[in-house]
Amino acid sequence: MHMDDELKKRLDDQDALLKAIYQSTEKTRKYFLWSLVANLLLFLLPLIGVLLLLPVLIQSLDLNI
Image (cartoon, rainbow, N blue to C red; front, side, top):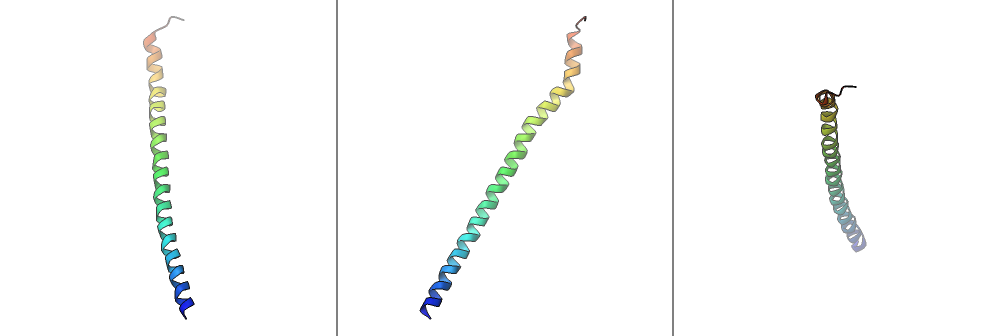
């Protein structure tokens, strides 16, 4: 009977640790997801801005070719 109680306690402890690991993993996954979104926005928004302003900049040079 003593072994069963000890085994149950160990399983309960492992279950609690697994839940804590899962929560930590989910927080890390969300952090990486939002980091990816932020990096894409910080890269793509200026790129789109340059592409939209490029014709205006070329016209302002007014090269006689």
